[in-house]
Length: 257
Image (cartoon, rainbow, N blue to C red):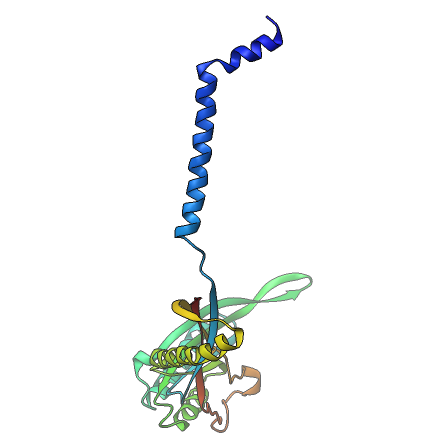
């Protein structure tokens, strides 16, 4: 049978027409689905307006990290005994300034050998020990000088490190919430003017995001053993926290009409 006869015969086969009809129906279904999706799920045009809220506060908490470093003691046991004795003296001195046991926490406790080189050989020449305490001083806003007294008393009792000092507020979450509300209000106040300038009309709010700009953690004071001498610092350190701000940025997203 010739090639032309074979092609003519295929056109008259029911199977061919069923396949052809199925392809047309499938294309129609796909086209209708795309049109339906575009009609019922039209993409929203949106714009985000950023607002900022600020709330000023005075810190009422001071958190100081104090430490004792013991260097090059011949026996490990003696190094720990010296460390424990000094730490106990520090704790008692701090408690004498009305700091409760719950506000004194150990952050680090370590013992490690000190190596020296003799004739290109590393040998243990002693042991070093270290312990750090995190001390929370409450009521800083009412009595700022108490923090200075705590640091001075601890150093006179044997502390030879201040690893860090931060200031905080016991109602920080409440302050952040106040800043959020102010930031949203700021964004809403800006929205009308900005929409008018852009020649658009805003509809409803579809969502928002937030970012806390401040406060950020930082260390404002510190000293190491080398600058204190064997007897600690001679006078109370003068530390001031000043006034702080909680700053929150909020982006409010509007649907455009």
